[in-house]
View 1 (cartoon, rainbow, N blue to C red):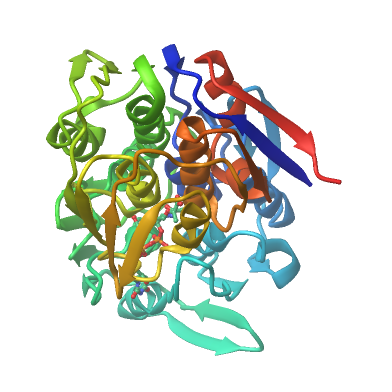
View 2 (cartoon, rainbow, N blue to C red):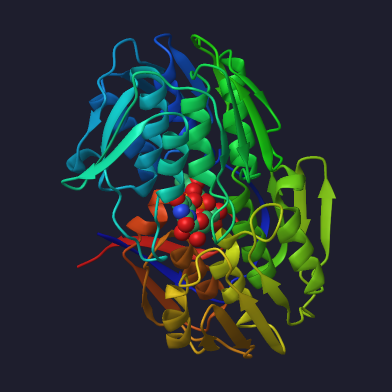
Length: 420
Ligand code: EPU
């Protein structure tokens, strides 16, 4: 196992290019199962999560080639069973259910387990499949869905924590090959959902309203192969903007869609950090005067839950009292105990974190617990006095392409070493 060592206090400057989006790549790779023809997907980030997804596609019968960022998937013949061994490493494996149901009219996929960011049910995905006419059974740890035929329906996918991203993806991928019209009410509006809808539309699907709360899908008989570029990863972009805010002189993030990160740049601007946007590049120019903030995570276009931990790290060193409320995954605070080991003052009250900014964080051995929590610890380490040792960095490798190398290119003193 690797760990990352960060020698804090070295200012960052320069620019990095953002990679393709992890959370677009995973459902889009799953969507290649919807056609017998080859699909070519560019800018797939080199991450363990995209690797796991390709392993699942291979298990299901697809031919897969990967050359740098380009992945070709040819799913001429597929089978519809993905057992525990194949899917257990990644919760997003569940997004092969929709395309398998659409194409094979049946699928058996092992049920995803819980995860450290909280309970992650898939009841809304299953409700959507049932509305399309599928029978759903959960037995022996597997989800079985089958339908002699799928028929369009009106489906409300809004749950008690708001819309579901992968649930919208899953139902959309089944509905594109259903007979008739499906209306998804309470659809997720995230840019990754829009990227998937664009991919499916290029394949021949008929989808309206992607990016709004109401999507209308007219089923078609079959889909064809396509070539597609994955959108930039808005959470990677946001993470580097926060790195710039914490430890930068001037940091520029290139190949980003400014609209996709607006909630993040707005939050940083509200902290008093100057932000400059030019086409697909965003620069952050910290001036030493960042101030406290009140922040609530929301579905897109609100502030993303996937940036909450990183903001916690920033606000830990920002003057004044900040308050963060986590509305999507109320228990997503595994980073707090570790940030406290570095000298942060954070009190948790249910889903709310009250953060009293401190002048100094101190380097310490800390443990990564999930992807974004780990990123937050690395960011805190950039500012901390002394050396921060982040262990279990496989969490980071699931979702950030070369995070340590990119930070090194910006001037961070950061190294990856084998854990003894
Ligand atoms: N929910 C339900 N029932 C469901 C599905 C979700 O109650 O059937 C609840 C969840 O428990 C949560 C809320 O609805 O409270 C939103 O969950 P959502 O389904 O949108 O999450 P997801 O689709 O499983 C994706 C991202 C996550 C990101 C969330 C929220 C991927 C692969 N994952 O998960 O990304 O946090 O949307 O934006 O796209 C990450 O990248 O670190 C990550 C965790």
